Image (tube, rainbow, N blue to C red; front, side, top):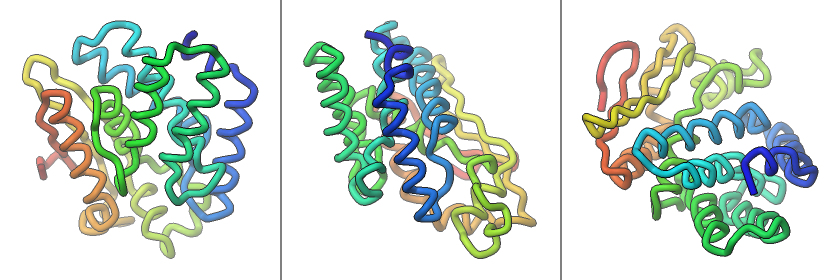
Length: 218
């Protein structure tokens, strides 16, 4: 079974769409197909850059694509409910138990509230998810001055996550428009996520660095 088969599965498409609709009703940023596709590709790229084999890369992409389906149940504990939902999907599609275990463990550990990089797959998913900060995820531009999460995401005009295998380093680079949001606001809502990224990078044998507007801040 492959990532492309997961993407084409009707049930998966419904769960992702409805999960995003629920988050839209709650006022959250976009968590639909653009987000999960970006996370899937980035998670796979991270493991590939660290020298993992093609199947591990494929599993990382699958975990990335499925990681937010738990939002269809509730935003609270969505990583755990998403892991249970992913188990049912993958079991129905007759994935081997070893692969199901790896994927659901990663999904169940991707949120900064309860997550821990328990495996390279989980670490790659954490980094890919937390690095997806961009203004195109903001749904209502008129709300950016009343909602700090929308404002910070909208202020990010450029974001990239790079792996440097020879130096054993992972670098998140951001360009933030200070006229929209201050760096203090970024750290107000993203400090826990960045600390989890540091742990995830360490689980992959790397140091994590953060560069904002050309200046190294971590």
